[in-house]
Image (cartoon, rainbow, N blue to C red; front, top):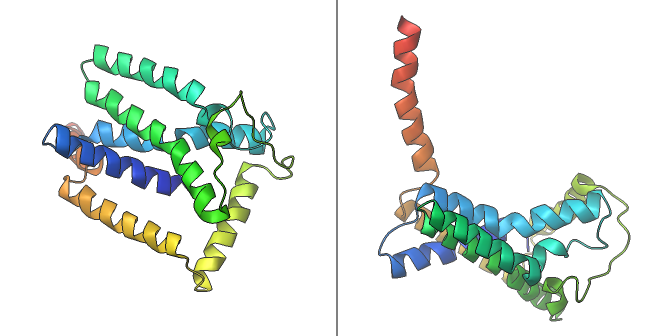
Length: 200
């Protein structure tokens, strides 16, 4: 899955969880954390594999349930101690949805179930040695993706992706545009102080 697909799924899941459990919308910090956590496995593994050659493929430490579980427990414990348990929940939901999303994508796109994507180091995923760096690899893969879209070769999966993105955007608006809302409020608070100091 592409990073934005993981972010969409993570935000949707957390927002629905908030509405069902807390009868409330996600806060800005929680929304930021769930999006970050949902992309974190790729932020760890892709650079280490594609740029530095630490792993053979972009599915290793960051995608492993053996890493994600203790990391989520640690994040949840820290968030609870800081008085922000919902932020810990957001982190757990975001990061735990990532590996199954990749397994689902491998089934949809290639017709194979690759459970091994989330079992490093017990089972490792092999691939060709990286011949390009991180940005060159992304540019190549995204270029193919974009070329397919521009050619009108849009699969059912991509249409579903667009539908989920549209629904996530509408839900984000309904939630009160978390993160953007906090940035705007912070800017409003900073502007009076800035104008007062500049007028002196």
